[in-house]
Image 1 (cartoon, rainbow, N blue to C red):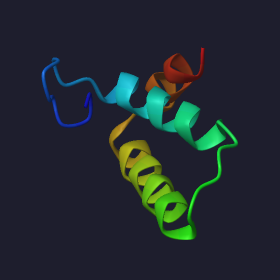
Image 2 (image 1 turned 45 degrees about the vertical axis):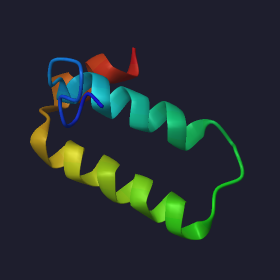
Image 3 (image 1 turned 90 degrees about the horizontal axis):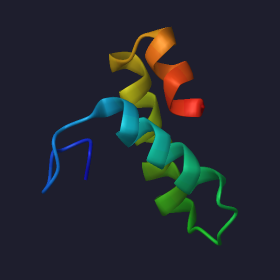
Image 4 (image 1 turned 60 degrees about the vertical axis):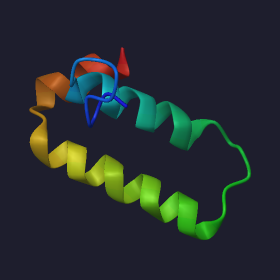
Length: 58
């Protein structure tokens, strides 16, 4: 939602934060779902500065 600006202003920091939360939620993921999430996190990491990444983890 935040990554693509769907119904909210586009915000890569919030998007990164929510992908991290989702990835760490320890829910049962299919391997394909887990891989898609990891790829999304890696793509966002390339667009964010180290400071932005730290803001998302707070």
